[in-house]
Image 1 (spheres, rainbow, N blue to C red):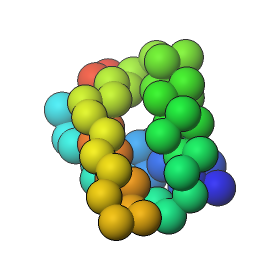
Image 2: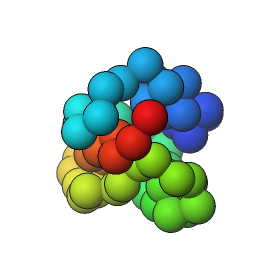
Image 3: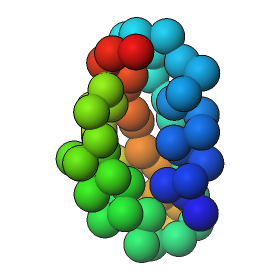
Image 4: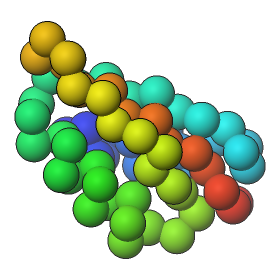
Length: 63
């Protein structure tokens, strides 16, 4: 589900905007990495794991 919601959210962002995504699913680490790697117009800046919460920072690179 994090990938679907992230994809929807990035659609409304302007170029160079950064989206912070938080999830409780450990699978979100690999899922969002794979999605960003295979999706034009987004860049995964970083991922942080802490206390069962996974935070991902995604930058919109183009419209």
